[in-house]
Length: 462
DNA sequence: TCTGGGGTCCTAGGACCC
DNA sequence: TCTGGGGTCCTAGGACCC
Image: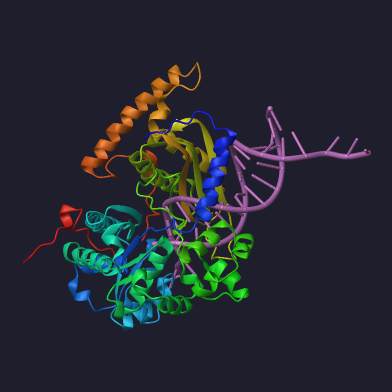
């Protein structure tokens, strides 16, 4: 069914409001849905262990870009007292003393393994939403006539197949709402006695309450550190406390987001599965420099390289961008050094999806706002006001004929660039600006190979 | 020496419109 | 004497997620 909406009138606005009210306060009996949540255990680390089985029992950590801080760590690494977000230089001594394996982020590898994992799961359930690189929601509504044991068995079969086919360990949660399903998955990870799957339907009321009473409210999906602190000041410390809070107070004091989370914890589904990933609304590429940068040429080079990646994402999702922005700034941790930060954007007269136009616009912004004498630490680009690319070739005024001809030429050139990148690698041919300087390239001293995506890295058996 | 990056959604307030 | 009640669109800032 296709709904064509040419005119929004007051009845539709009324209908929208009514829908919003329904989503926030579904009447009893309408929320008999069932969700699956699954994610990998220490995903990046598990990917690194895939091709290095000798690391199976050793602590493993994966670092952020530039080898800055720890972004993923195994159970064994957590046992050393380490946490996500700790700077590498502070953790280094402990890691070395305990024979830990340390890796730079290898997104090419993780993306490839993620695809295998999610395709494997998708084949076993009716509908799936890919929520993040290592995480999915599934819709199990109506499956197994709601027989709790059957559903637990299904989750175990999925875990077993992912383990066998992809080699990645996972856990799963099953519940009537997304928030509860994610919480169940958290329990499955925390308490090994559950054997990797927690099914809300299989827990009796007393068990559910005990679990929620033992869950700090900050563990709940949607409750971040700010909200956690504000709740703590009101004496709300556990998930159970939040469930029992006065809904009116939650709504007034914290807004609709937390009100929805509370409803979900109470078992009323407010967040539907979102199977088709909508095109992104903005595309951002930024990186810190390995060492400080003060020359205009180097900044432009960095921005040009980031733009190459941003335009690749832009084109992959079939969009064109009407606004292009740049950002660059000094090191905020160097409190005594002179600081300078720029975040500026330019709205173009049309939407574009070609590297030349967008790079020119970005470089012009850098030239305009660059100031000599600062030690810049980070630079990036962003593309917003995205539109479907097909729309970019429609005339917008009576006098667009010439512009459209230029646009069409640039599009043909861009298509050629895309093809060259596909056949000869993504850095084979790009704008000259990207080569003005190379002395800012990211540090990745501990990078593993890409045996699933690069022929040169393929495993050899001796 | 050394502290990541890429996203989403909501809210409040101002300008403007009928 | 008395000065409405909706809306839209945009931006900046905040909070959250992995």
